[in-house]
Length: 306
Image: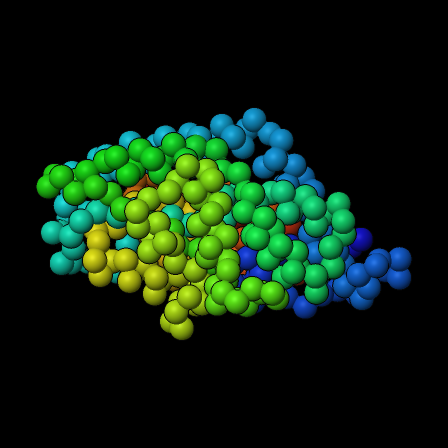
């Protein structure tokens, strides 16, 4: 397996799960059952092992969620504060909400990653494999996520209004053979959340899938703005830069670094990132050439003025 092909496939995973544009696949060796394409999750072995087996990942995730709970309590007291860049004014009197991604922010999807590696899943098989995993309704929670969500729902703003937790996911609504539902993936995700003890009276309304409405594309801004029309977004938790800002999936690493620095005061106060080395838009923007990506200097060592 060439290193270029390994990164290319990582880009395809990111495209499928994050709504990014995929890079073309490399030619495979004749021995590959996926010929002329490499196995879908090739190259993700160490990253997947780290998420599934390391105490370091669990500790990091729990640390982030505990810090997020503390920040949420502080943010509720500042009625002028919003965690949505587009929410500039008029939100001061709105009830509070937290926005969260689902996959590898709340639900741990390292199991299908491991399966795809062990079974050498081919690229054309991914959609069926992923949908079958969603239908299992069996994803465990990312460490710290359940405790954070429960704590958030118990918090209230200065007027006694509870925090509403809204889940914005790029799980895509699509028809499934033998199922009459227009969006069986929503019912699957709701059942998975309920199995983790995260049910709520408004849970179905609080879950927003890609394609559930025509304007709800992979870019999540439209859904965040839909929340912002009725709520002050007090905190945002995700595992990908695109969970926080629009347009970053089309930006270069340097542009993404400038965007990160422009919001440096938001990280750890309004925005919290769960580590996900398995896939993401960060791989897509680097392109398919692993050697070239490894040779690049760091996009930024420090933000200007730090």
